[in-house]
Image (tube, rainbow, N blue to C red; front, side, top):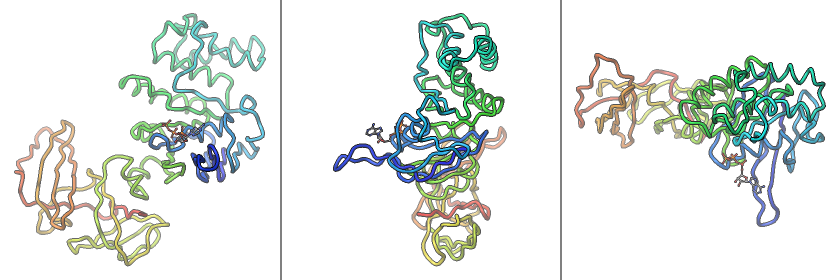
Length: 358
Ligand SMILES: Nc1ncnc2c1ncn2[C@@H]1O[C@H](COP(=O)(O)OP(=O)(O)OP(=O)(O)O)[C@@H](O)[C@H]1O
């Protein structure tokens, strides 16, 4: 278990001081696939480098299984890193690359041999053991980099955008592969990405970061269905933002009144806004449906219908002045006969709207 408490990193000093990490507190469980997700420059790599020991935090503590990590040099920490660039030795073979870290640790020869064989099997690279890493593909290099980092059996593996150099198809394959490696080895993975889909498909939990801070931590469904604030809702997937009035909020159960005057149940976070004022409600496009404008929660006019193959997007201008994009999965026997300009309504069930913190 990794406990990071109040981690802060300020680069430079005086007028040039820049806060790359701002009071980050998070606990990552052992055997967890944990992802740091956020836009470029939000501090993801800085947090990884603090855990690895490549940089010292300005303030804060990092513990692994209760032991202070910060007083140990990087090579003594039971933590390994897979870099975006792989950083393999091109003149060494696949097997020699995997053995390298173990040799540095002075492990016995027989142990190195058996571990290398085990790692080659784990990443399915046995047939290429004797090839130089300059003579294998990018996807294969990625596997070798993983095998090399896993070989000393670290407690924690840090992965800094390891899939970004791969093409789309290979990236999809490696996403599944990484997930398999994590569950087969039982090692805690801390994975950095700015790709929301990658984060949603692979992670047990995700920390969404912005400007050096963690904005929300939760499982993929939690983060996607119940974003706590506008930044998270906007960064992950597509969202409709609807003005509403918060009538009541108790725990996570809220009641809101929409511009149409209709009332509906919604979700709110514990630290959400107080009842009685205006709030923003976030609703995912696929959580709403087209409805009779006379009874719908949000009546409006159909502006545009866009066909996407797997689904169709309906752009609706709402009567209260806002707009809404609704997404419906296509069926073979269902074609849209609605004309642009038609009067139409948008409705969504109780509980799918999320009252945002800001
Ligand atoms: N050594 C340094 N000196 C000064 N500023 C730095 C240093 N290292 C990082 N920064 C700044 O800290 C901020 C966070 O950087 P970091 O590399 O952690 O971002 P990131 O979220 O990993 O971004 P990316 O996805 O682009 O890799 C950036 O604005 C960066 O310019």
